[in-house]
Image (cartoon, rainbow, N blue to C red; front, side):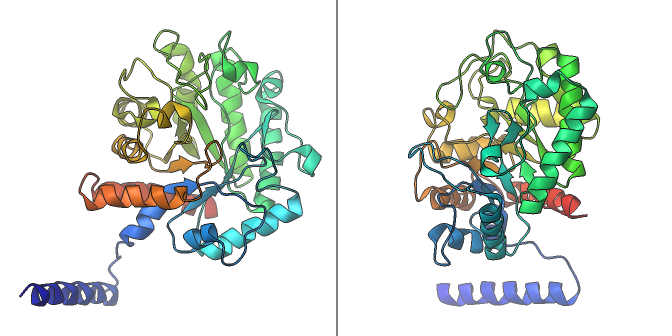
Length: 368
């Protein structure tokens, strides 16, 4: 009886799908495709063989997007980026394997955080602090120059600009990653940098929401609590200005603890993402987490718990750099954990569809 019931369920499901296609009704993408589109992973190698395990995950859609690094943190050796020619070939191989629109991302902020280094033959991009000492027009020009290079290589997503306002002892300020300590002036450069990238057909990323400029601890390695130093009027201003101006890219949420939610870091917080960013500030575009393998998250949460909280908070893309803590099976583990949460009903298919739609909308906008 059970086999007969399964037969009829499958038969009518296939028949219904066929009727939908015949009538021109838009069909939902498969659950597997939608889940894969929510996962971005890093990998090892400046070249990938045709039978490479990671390339197969890109091909079957379990890894929807990739992030590139110039250096492997654990080995200290070169990782994905050796030269412009090599990188262009690698990216072309990834895109061919995928066969779908995808994000190929780098952290190209300028200065110390430049994966495309001048000594390897790439454009030399000044640090945010240096750019902040000039005009917003010059900042836009520099960003466009960098975007033109990235676009030619096949990179279409830059995890920049940093919208954090530099505090007196902040890690961000010390490493010249902020445009400055003046929130209004910082906001002008953030918007200019984002516009320059978009002009060159590269998606900019507003980071690290809600603003981590006063943090004295680095969330790559430690937890950072901003409850006492966060100034909403100052720290939120660059984000608010950019969003109100029609920010064209995506928003990255940091792993810092805030007064908005004493229980969870911002990247896993309903109060920060859904309530503050989406409802109060009106952002309906793509939200990406910072690297979920950073110690500020992985030291407190299991992989499955971190994914559950991030998706429940309304994040769209889950980032696994797989560099701070290399795990060969990390891409498969991340996909399996997300699939399990949906199959068990802890995350609804509708929730997954919402993120998938946001991601595809941005990819389509970029392609125009």
